[in-house]
Length: 283
Image (cartoon, rainbow, N blue to C red; front, side):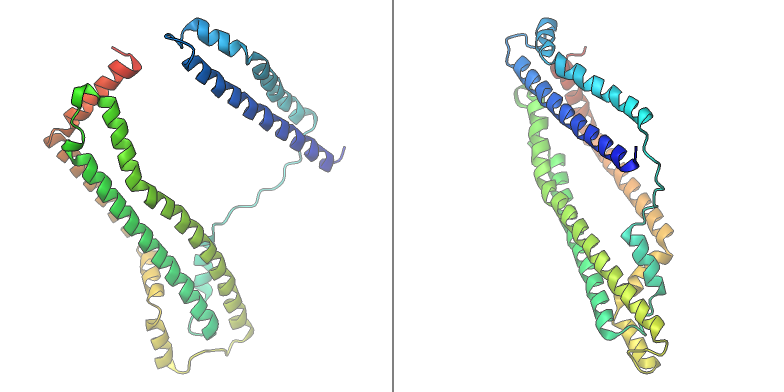
């Protein structure tokens, strides 16, 4: 049997298995909801056994199909293909940027590369601002004791309400980070294409230079501060990461100490006790 046919068999098996798992998951969720609305003692042994017995056939069918996949992998094995190492666009762009001479790069390509770098920097700064604002608002809300009065002992309701309130502050930074990540990925792909084109032109024309004289080339360097900033970060990457980690650690310790001093730790312990004894049922 050819490998193409074997791959098609494995693909068909995977599709059927996915449908079975999805169906079983839907039935399981429906059974749990039915159990919850079944009576005053919904999660008793009898009620759970009765409802789960109704989905026993799909469960066993899914289990048999999973075991069949093990047999299929032995009877019709797939040829192992050599996996290509994944190289991220950031690494590719960094490697190509080291080969690119901006002084000899044509003006049109150089301007396009600078614009893409500028937009990536702007988007990153905007995303950072969103995160700082959202984190600051969430922290102000979390540290304000008036937001957690614990009226009538409704600790669980307060924790849920506080979590939802804090989540509102972090939704916009979370969505912006996804959008910025996708946009930066696209910008890097375009910059990689422009950088490859510029390197190829410079290699084909060794005498090509879009500026004349050392003064003009020095002026070109001054017009591209992003390259200087990138080079500084590349040279001192380890030091910057170490300082950043130490700063985050110190900030975390400072907030822990503040929480202990203002009684926040005791409040958290009391709420944890209430959750364990009232919600989960321990103690």
